[in-house]
Structure formats: C-alpha cells, structure tokens
Image 1 (cartoon, rainbow, N blue to C red):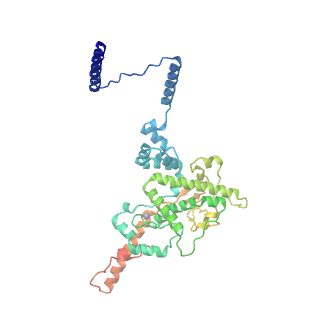
Image 2 (cartoon, helix red, strand yellow; image 1 turned 180 degrees about the horizontal axis):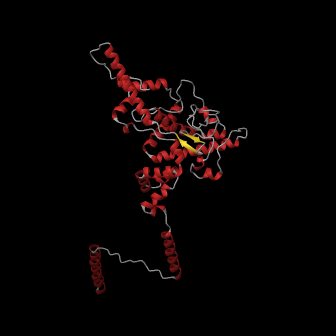
Image 3 (cartoon, rainbow, N blue to C red; image 1 turned 90 degrees about the vertical axis):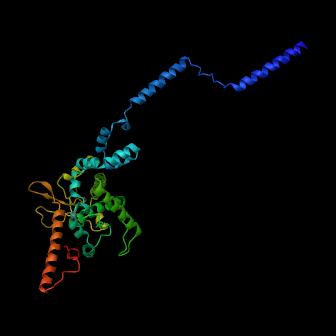
Length: 373
Ligand SMILES: [Zn+2]
C-alpha cells in the first residue's frame, strides 16, 4: 500500500506539472550550431571573394545620372530607345532628357541629314492672324484641289502644322523617308512593291501612312525622334547605295562609300562630292532607282539628270567653292507671301466695292476666302 500511496502522490505531482506546462509560454532555446570545419571555412572564404568581385563590377545602372547621360548621347537613337526599356529609371531618364540627347546626336551623327531635312513649323509658333490665314478652310480646300495628295504620304494636319509650301515639303520628306525605309527589304530582295488600285484606298496603305504621319509628328515635337528618323534614312541610304553598287549594268556615278563609312553610323561620307539629288520621289516606283537629279549650282534648272541612289534634298554642289550649299529655309518668305496675297485680296475687294459705290462691306472675311497662293 505504501507503494501505491507513493504512486498516487507522484500522479498528483505529474498532474501539477502538466498544468504548469500549459500555462507557461514555450521558449525556443534552439540555436544554430556553429560550423567549425576546414571545409566550411574554405567555402565561406570563397563566397566572400565572389561577393567582393561582384561588387567591384561597374555596371551602367550604378553610374550617376550625369555619366549615364553622356553615355546616352554617344549612342545611336535606336539604342537609346532600347535602353529606355531596361528599367523605370532609364525610361524616366530618357524621357526627361530626350531633347538634350536628341540634339546632341543630331549634331554629332547626322549634321548633313539634319540640314537636308528641316522640320515643318508648328502652327502654335506662328502669330495668330497668320496662323488663321494658313489654316482657313477656303485655303485648305484650294490646296487640296491644286496639290493632289501623294498616295504614299499623308498630308499634314493644317490645325497643327504650318502649311506654307516650304513646311509642306518638309513634312512630305519626313513621311517619305519612313515609307522608303518600310520597303527596304522588298527592294533588297527584288520583291515588287504592291501597286495601289487607282482611286481606291487600301487599308494597309492607309494604316502605313497614318503610322508614318504619327512618327513624323513626334519628330516635330521631340528631337530624339527626329534623330531616330535620320538614323532610319541613313540606313536606307546605305542599303540603297549598296544595291546600286552591285548593279554592274548601272554605269552612272555612284556615291562613294567604304565599308567603314557604312558601319560608322554617321552621315560623314555624304559630305563628299557626289551625285546626290533633291527631286522628290513622287511615286513608290521611284524607289527602284530613287530618281534623284543633280541640282546645279547658282540655282539653275535641272540639267542632264544624273541619277543617284541617295535622296538628300535642299542642297546643291557649289563648284567654285567645292562644297555643298544648303538651300535657305523658305518658311518666312512663304508666310509673307501668304499675308501679301491676303492683303491684296482685301484691297481688290475694297476697290471693287468702292467702284460700285457699295455702302456696306463684304459679308465674309476676304482674308479667309481669298486664294493665298
Ligand atoms: Zn511654314
């Protein structure tokens, strides 16, 4: 019995212990067992060395903003756009500094093309009365009748861009070089460019034209996009020169271009004397030979057309000085002509009214209904 009594006592103690365990929070007293072996130490040393080496590698993302900007300015525009896709920081950096980067690239890589392809002016940069004359519906209707739109170039938006003759030509050139670039693979491979049925708009063509127009609009607002279009046209020009050089039957004078010059990514080789031309390819058929004539000095007429493979408008070769001369920008001259024409129309309306002893003036504004050209 004493034994049983003892057991009974123990059972009671166990019950008390169980109650204590339930009430006290469990404490985790486990700890990592430190590893002390030669193998472990060797592995830790290797890991530390690896991390040190990794930290020592300089990558672009670790550079300060000023240095990244210097790198961006030295790249081709397409590479800048690719870099902007890497992460949010690069995207924001390129977006915020597009004009600075674009201006630098244009100056360093495409000085000749930049002169050959001036931008059309924004209507918002023109004084309000003249802008009203330019975008007047009557004038636009007149332009659409007398200047039939090209099938491969979308006309400019007259509410956004200046539509003086100089600016329309500048706009056409940007859209043209994008269209020319679109067909480079076909031209390289001898695949005919699809014909457009007369008077019947094709969905694919309308889509291509509006895409080119959107890119050209971006170039007007953003010099990085302008630089990208210049890069595109330089690539097209290099491919065109190569195509013509391979054509042994073509005995015309070619543009001189070495492999190094073609790979340079700059337009420096286009500064050399060569059969470069300015005539606008008014139809896609012209792409096969890129019908461009040499424009002789002193602003004389075209003579003895010598076809070339590069389209570089707005310049001519001055023989006396042995250099290319760029044709002056005619926007201001065209604007003054638009204003003069409108004033002349007002004078004629007033003179007509006086001669007929008219008491009241014209019921519509002659400035907006007259023929400005
Ligand atoms: Zn203009």
